[in-house]
Length: 166
Image (cartoon, rainbow, N blue to C red):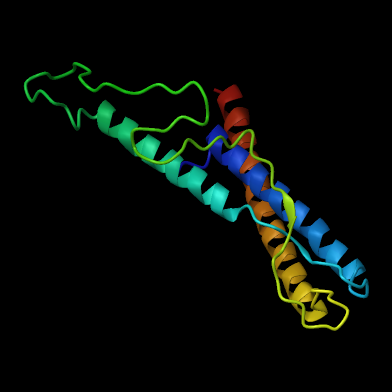
């Protein structure tokens, strides 16, 4: 996958949004560790982002094959586009490659109650040790993604500066 596409920037941005929202969920869980009947919150967004990446890769690969002439129904038709592509207007449409269209721009990670068994008598489902581990993991992932985004923009800035000096 190319790192200088608008898709990559949008993907990093949505991943950072997901980890920021997960941080809020974890801190809310920690704050309510002693609240009776409190159910822990979680944010799941990785599967949606993974589907967006898979869809983007399959779309990129099929467009590269069309440009290179691969998949032509007519072996003697060189330089002629013979492949019929479906056009989608709404994100709910299905693509010819299979699976629902993934609209990354409209995706917003959601905080929801985790279906988890309560080990305590007060029916609180928060385990403080587990939450601290999740907080550490989430913090490390957020920092790594933030570093990636910083390097991406630094590279773009360098290209713009170099292009201006030519």
